Each structure stands twice: as C-alpha cells, then as structure tokens.
Image (cartoon, rainbow, N blue to C red; front, side, top):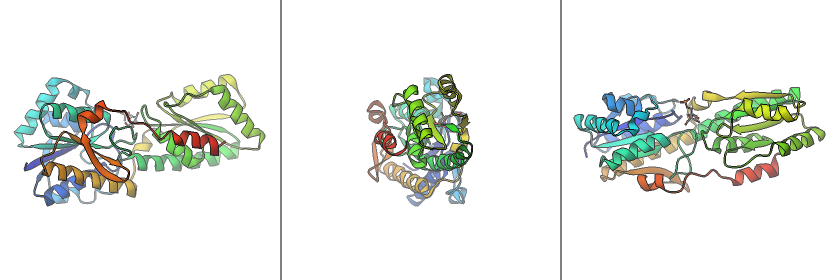
Length: 321
Ligand code: F6P
C-alpha cells in the first residue's frame, strides 16, 4: 500500500484536526502518499480529493472543527453512492482509507470494508457514543465547554433563586449530561439511559429550597426531550421554581481541543497508519483502559452498544442534592 486517504464525516468534533495531522505526518514519515478528501463521503463521491503535504497540516493541532470539512451524507448508505466512492478511490490510486467520525461515518466505513476496500474507523464525535472505545475524540473538549457554561448559569441561578434546565447534546447518549452534571454539581441529571420521575424531582427541588438552597441546575440530555418540553412538565406541576431554559446547542461542538483530545487524536491517527502499513483494514481504533486498541469494525458495530458510566448517575444522587 502506497497511497492512502483520510476524511472526516458527520458532526465535527474538536481534535479531528489533530487526528488528520497525525495521519498526514506519520503517514509521510512511514513512506505513504496521503490524500485528503473534503466534505466527508459527499466529497468522496464527488472526487473532492487532493494530496496533503507536511505543510498542509501546520498550525492545525490546536484548531477546532475540521479543515477537511464535514458533511452528513445519507446517500452513502445506498449501493450507488458506495460504488461511486470506490471508483473515485481507484481513480486516484488510493489503496487505504481512514474515516474519522461517529456512528453514521462508521457505517460508511463498514460498507467500504464489506466491498473489500481497506478502511479504518477513528471515533470522532462529541457524543462519546461509539462502540469499541471508552472515549471518542471531541468528548473531553465538549464536556469542558459545557462545564464552563454550567458554572456561569449557576451564578445567575443563585442570584435569582432560579431553576435552570440546561439541554446538552449527545444525540441518544447521556454521556455529556452525566459527566458535566457530576462536574458542575448539578442537582439533577436526566439521561435517556435512566427513567426520570417528575414528582420525585419536584420533591427534591422543594427539599433543597427548604434547606436554603438558592439554585437548581437540571442537566438534560437532548435524547430525553427538549429543554422547553421538560420545562412544561415542571411548570404543569409547580409554578414556583422560577424556571429558565438554556439550550447550549452547537457551541458545544466548537473551540480549541483540550490537551487530552489532541493527544488521543494523535495516538489514534498514528495507530491507523501503523495498521495500514501492515495492510490491516476493516478495523476501528479505540481507547480502552488507557491503551490504543483496534478491533474488527463489522463485529464492533454488530456487538454490544456503547453504554455510559451509569455509576456516575448513582454517584450524583448521593453527592448532589
Ligand atoms: O453527533 C454530534 C451532534 O452534535 C449531536 O450531539 C447532535 O444531536 C447532532 O450532532 C446535531 O447535528 P447537526 O449539527 O447536524 O444539527
């Protein structure tokens, strides 16, 4: 294998640039020609492919987003899109591909793998919801961004004795809510992986108020429901909580990656190159017990789904009330 390519796909995540940089630099170091595909699978099908040099990744390690751009491209689930993608790869003489992205991107990587094209998946998403890894690139930065907002919201909540419902991202996973809820001392964490009881929540808020508590922070994972809908539930039952809703939105996806995201991205990128050097494709890279690992991507996607650390949920009930 001489010529390889990299693309980023799905929602961008801080640290994607660090992963691309690692792939390009380590790839060139190992004797590969490295190509960048812009706009994810959409760019692959369109042939938006160009060679990347050492200088193309200068000054990128600390930048948020992805300089290769990204796209959501459901058309790649269809046979026709996949065939066109493979034809483009062949046209450019590319023999191996690294896909950095989330769940949907992994499905694209699996499709190429099943068609016999050596493809490697690297988990890049703020949601931390990918099988085969304990942590995804971008999660650490996103939770630190959310934490900063939660700390700020707590200040104003306390001043006005208010209840804040803070809707955070995560798609169907509660990881962002769990980690930031614990980190900010939120009174309630509401996640898709655990049922909530609105009556109990109200009782707990009231108990806190009686004890003299001045603020209530409810961190709500978007996978449960929207923040405004949750506020209606609370409002229907109790009007005296002075409830406000804050939907953090895409601010959670931007910004300079944390040191941890830069490092795991660099390690994962380098691992992908080592694997391609050994002609290994059809795998996904992950982080488990502080080690960079890899596993068959088809088996990983068909295997057990990612689960958040539910111990954190219980811990929060014991230490934040
Ligand atoms: O997967 C990352 C993510 O930010 C999710 O947390 C969120 O549900 C979704 O992407 C938002 O997608 P879009 O940027 O397409 O609106």
